[in-house]
Length: 299
Ligand SMILES: CC(C)(COP(=O)([O-])OP(=O)([O-])OC[C@H]1O[C@@H](n2cnc3c(N)ncnc32)[C@H](O)[C@@H]1OP(=O)([O-])[O-])[C@@H](O)C(=O)NCCC(=O)NCCSC(=O)C[C@@](C)(O)CC(=O)[O-]
Image (spheres, rainbow, N blue to C red):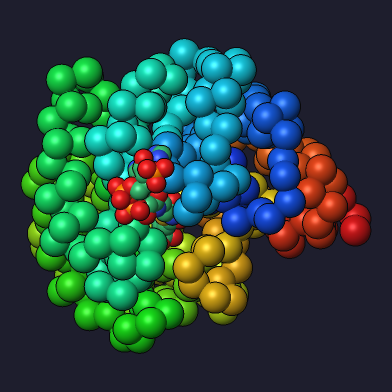
């Protein structure tokens, strides 16, 4: 299969990245990050979550962030909504695209959203119905697609079953998350080969964490399987609160550098993205997690 001519990056730094930070982050800093990312040319930004603040305190101010960002017409600004309560809060905040999130592993599902996989899928049905009534698009996630911190090995068929359900209930895209970054290129190819039998490949996205340093090779392997949407996080922000030791998502800057080298279009300005990542890293007092950014900044 030939490589896609264009790839869409889904920027998850403001949500998947910042949700894991323990220190308080001001609303103004979150807003600045989202605005920097849209200015850099990102067309899809996950801004926050409407989840229980007891479970993920860092996302508590998501409605305020939505109210303050400068929304550009061509950009999709999305939020996570695990249940109807979350969807209603998102609608109130004017959100036009949401995401529901399930897992391929029972133990992770319980730790992350306090219910079994089948309970979570049943819970999403009214979310999908309400979203449809309000003309809001829904994306779906499956976590632990290449391994689980509690259940270990995950078969691609387990992932395919959950992805098929999400797609069948109306998710326009299903993102497959290697939550703890254990996957390797051949496993990633096999994953998309198997899941691609149940859900059209143009409806699938890859979401790779870089814990084992495999994310870029997994993305390249996925490109070879015809996947053209990837989630990434500026400056490699993030981790996973329920997956001990997991590092952030693959850095958006590093993915962009790979894609540029392959001659694949994204519409994103690398230098502006590097500056956005460096700014939020400085706010957080952290080293920039993007190798490309570190190289370009000479640090
Ligand atoms: C799903 C629940 C709510 C179940 O949590 P629960 O405790 O079973 O919920 P409940 O329905 O029994 O409600 C308990 C309390 O939570 C409140 N509540 C209930 N729902 C909401 C809501 N939407 N927003 C705000 N508050 C809410 C509800 O009002 C009540 O408040 P109380 O009466 O005790 O004061 C909880 O487990 C939760 O919020 N989990 C969120 C977990 C999360 O955000 N994880 C990170 C995102 S997933 C991820 O990062 C993976 C991904 C997507 O990136 C892909 C990958 O890498 O794998």
